[in-house]
Amino acid sequence: MSVKKIKIYTISILKLLLLSLCFFSCRDEVELLEPNQITKVSTVVAEEKKVHQDLTSFGSISYSKKNDVAAQVQGTIEFLYAKEGESVKKGQLLARLTNVQLEIQQEQAKNSLNSAESAVFLAETKLQEARLSVESRLLAIEKTELEIKQQQLELVDLEKNLEDSLQLYEIGGVTTAEIESKKLAISAKQATLEILNKELVTSQLGFRESDLIANGIVPAESPQERLEQFVQLNTRTYTAELQAAYSNLFNAEKNLDSMNKLMQELFIKSPSDGVVGAVYFHQGEFVPENEKIFTLMDVSPAHAVFYVQEEDMGGITIGSPVTVELPSCNLCFQTKIAEISPVVDLQTGNLTLKAEVENSKLEVKPGMFVKCIVPKKEQHSLPTIPKTALVSFSNDGDSQVFLVKKSMAVKTNVKIAQEKDGTLWISDGIKPGDIIIDSPSPFLKEGTNVSE
Image (cartoon, rainbow, N blue to C red):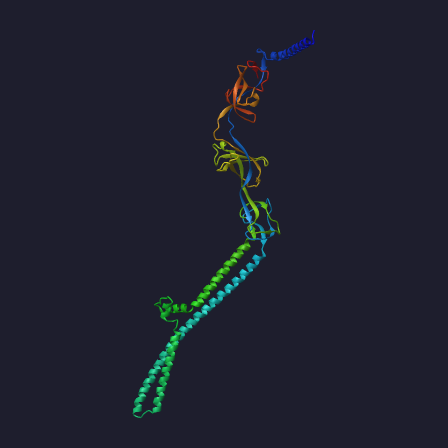
């Protein structure tokens, strides 16, 4: 016999042996699944449950507001009263700066104010003296007028006396020397009157109605009011000086007030309640003007920031409920969506959502990882079974299970609508109340009698 034939016979014998082994091994299993034999199985009842449509997203905690506290004036940090991570209240002192130049300017402003106050006092005194001087001049004018009247009366008396003396002179009763003496007395009186009239005209300068009119003042009817008008007219220079002094005083006060406000800017205070997120300078360092020293974060409440694809935004609006979970703190908050970004990110297609998180105890810190769950409004119910009940699984949603009908295993096609945590929602193939074989044996065949 040739070698080739020997090989063929050997292969044939091996195949027969393999077939025999398979036959006897399968025969035992087949005997277990014979139709007349009842197979014990584990079963579950298909329960109707709402389809799990909650939207789950992940994000992080962010502060609700941020304040950068900057130095309005330059200076050197003398004291720091707050550290990173500390909670601060509105108006609380955070740091104190020193600025020698501002201190010098403040002292100069104080000296200027003192000088301005002295100048005002001096101008007021001069104006008061000027008013007294004007009143004195008015009295002098009245006195001169009275003297003129008196001299006029005396002149009339002298003239009458001379007339009488001339009559006596004609009859020899008065000497020529006496007549000449009387004429000389009359000339002297007339000269005195002329001098007084000149003095009156001179002293009346600035106290005439024409002077009021020339300066745009309508003469008053009342003598007392007209007197006040003359006083004001003749004290204008001193009044102007007083006004200038008041103006300088006002400017000095404003300058000192500005310097005091600048000095107050050396005391850095918190503009709001919050947590010190960052400190950018240390004690003894120089801080330029408008350079930020602190960053304050308002984390009560905080915001959970997460992202949702635009196609998943159906039914989600501001005010929609959301559950925020913080695994690191073992915290869970029920809250609402406070903000929705009006713009979709072109690269990711995401919308940014913010949910307010109560944080009165300041347990929640910015940057913490969060899990956000947004329940959808529209939900419907489907029968559910455990995933272990599947006989076969298909990615296109069509799978198979064994139903128990009349104590018999019946293979049925099912369509899986959703899966979560080992539970399957079935949209087609079974109905609520159906009995399903759980964890079926791979050798279980359709038609086999089964019992629990």
